[in-house]
Structure formats: structure tokens, C-alpha cells
Length: 551
Image (cartoon, rainbow, N blue to C red):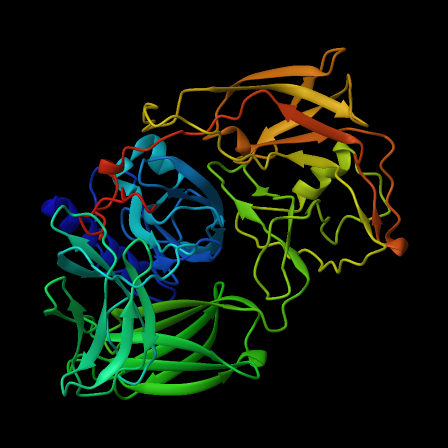
């Protein structure tokens, strides 16, 4: 386990340093065994609660560390629970070696260890060493704090990453858990004190044994948790300090002001560059003379959406990276575009989910399935297969196509003319066999409906790696169809197009007509049910069991 942990730390470190925007590529190890792809994932934090959003940055490079030479344009990121079950999968568009996206966490997720696993289709089929994984933790939200009148004997108190690493003069979230002699979570209570004996805050765990609170440590002060034992004695557990050379911290203030603080925890940090990216665009760069830096940033002057904050040393080593979602000035919705080209004929995947945002500026589940047409195809045209191919004609693998912004009004009607699968993984039993690689071919069957009635029709389908490779399919009299020999990772990578002569669009009324009456039901959705968690990165989760009766 130690060697595996070291391997992931080394791999993750050089990929993150080498593939960050603007980083030099000359110092990377070179493989002589042919083409390979390797990946890395950074997140906005490592501790989450049910219902939160995981923002992540995915990196992908070839065997020489070059982001521009990778053959894959889609990076898959999976959320995996402690049984190895795949809970969610997100596709991320990769341009110049990296791309950003997010995963919405369900409000019903239980507390415990989870993993993010990232890979390209190439890695999954040809080079499993390029598959990256990292552990995260979900803190319980529904458990209620309790006072313990006669607590069990606590043997250990575990502090989690980002929960217990103290940075002076910055609000720090403390997350810890009490564990008894049988390595089971146990409720605890006590007092947080500084090194002068001053009481800082009362510590009261929830019914599971988790402690979660925030305080601002002072410089030159040490802190410890004094936990009361059944004998009346107190047992002291020092709070660890941040172990990295420097760390970026972001705090949202009122009036759309973001407080950025760079805190040096090592005397070896003698300055560097602080860089802010929006997607793949560098929007701000500051030369910093020391490792301690503070700045208030007006969010109205930054682009909306996901921002990347990088701090690099004077020799271009990546010291710290933080992600922040800027909801200021956010448009009501946008269209995600991804691409995965493997040959010269492959083009841009046109994702048809219209992503909507709630009042807090956070992504919510798609409300509409819609294809927004590029400017070189007019809304007044009939959307049939010829026009669809004309859209593809103007695209190429290395161009970024900007689709017109769409403001949704109550009177607008947005219908489907292209249907994709937004499938959720099926429920699987705990003893299901793990799937470690892509099956040779997949089969998809289902029923086509028109106005909620089974419908005989024809159309086209394609997988997302090559939209020009359109194949005709036809449903029977009862609307059923079957497609075999699909060369895809899972059936959510298949899109359908129904050719209908009744598709006319009237842009002046903001009405986009398509196959509004068509829908599809699938007999089964292929999804890799389980992953062998022993193949994932070593978890930082302490060795306790979530098996108390209170859970």
C-alpha cells in the first residue's frame, strides 16, 4: 500500500505541475513504449456535504507530457462510493490538455469515503496506468449534535485534510472524528484551547462522532482539542498545521468581493506568480515578492463561471491551485460542448443538455434537451439530416465553436430534435462483479414513442467519438428497436436523430421546433456497475467502521 501511495503521489505531482496552463513541458519523463495518455484531477476541496457541487479540473497529457498532442478530447470523471459502485459519471471537454466541469452530489448520499476516477477512452482500453483516482470525503449533514453524558473510551481523534490544517488569520474549517478502541465512531465532547489555556470553542460531535466547526487561529499560537473521558480526565489532541509550502484561500465577501489570501507555511517560498484562468484564458497575472499575499477582487470584473487560481514559484513549480465558481453576471443558461476525436473525420460532439442555474448561481439539473444551431445555420431552416451534416461541415477538431447565448423566457418553447440519453446508473447488488475494462461491444434496445404512443419511424444514431459516422436505424410497428455492436464506453455515449419534415423554426418568436413529440425508453442502460476499490488511490480515510447503530 505504501508503494502504491507513493506512486500516485509522484504521478499526480508531475502531471499537475506539467500540465497546468502555461507550465513548461520539458522536464517530464518520456516513455519509450509507444503512445500513452496520463491524467490528473484537482478539485476545489476534499471535504463535501450531501447536496454540494464538486468542481474539478481535469488534465490529460501524452507520454512526453505534451497536452497539445493528446488524441482524446473527452475526459470521463466518475464518482465512486466505498463499495466500488459508480454513482455518477461526467464527460469533460479537453482542450490543450485540460478542462473543467462539476458533479452535483445527491442530498441522499451517506457519509463516508468516496473516490473520483478519471480516464480517457484510450486509457480505459489501452493503458490502465493512465487512469487517475483521488479520494474525497462526504461529511454527514442530517446527524444532529448531541451531548454525551457518559462517553465511551476514545482512543484516537482523526483530523481530515482541509479540516484541521491551520492557517493563521484565515477562517479554518475543522473536521475530525472520534474513534474508540474497536475502531468505531464514537460521540465525543470537549473544549478547543490554545497553548495559553484559553478556551476557544466548545466541541460537541454529532450522533455519529463527527466534529465540524470553524475558527480563525492566531499567528504563533498552537491549538489542541481537550476531550473529556468517562473518568473525568481530559485527553489532548493537537491540531496539525498546514504542511504545504503555501496555500491559496478564497473567501466570498459581501458586494461581490472575493478575498484572496496566499499564506506561506514555509520559509522556502520567496515569491512567484499568481495567475487566474477562466477556462483556457489567462485573465490576470500578478508577480508576488513573498509567500504571504492578500488582495480583494471585484467579481464583477471577472468572467462568470468556474475560475482557476494558480500560484507558481519563481522556477515555475505549481505550489497551490484553487477553483472558485463565480456566479456574478452569470447568464441564465449555456450549452456544454465536448469533443473526442480519434481520427481526422471525428468532429465536435454536440451535447444537447441546456444547463440551467438556480438563484444562487449553482448548476442545476438540465431543464431542456436542445440543440442550439451555430450562426452559419439559420433558425428558419428545416432541421433535417442534410442541415445536420451541414452543421458538422463547419466544425473541425481543433476549433472552438461559440454558440449564441439563449435567454429563456416564460413564453419560449424549446423542443427536441435530437435525443440523447441522460441515464442514471442502475441499482446494483453489493456482490456484483467489478468491471475493469470496456466490453468489446454493447447492445442497446428500446421503444420509440410519438405523443406517448409506440411509433414506427426511422432515423440516425451515432456515437460521440465521430458524429459524421451516422448509421440508419428503424423501429418496428410496435416502436421497438435494437442496435448491436456499439463501440462506446456506455450507452450514454449514443445520440439519436429523427428525420422529420415537420421541423420548422420561427426565430422571431423564440420558438425552436423539432421532434417535440418523440421520446425513447430503453430496456437497459449499460453502465460499469462496480469498480475494484483496491485499484484506486489509497484513501486518507482513517481506519474506522461506519457501523454504529446510530447511522
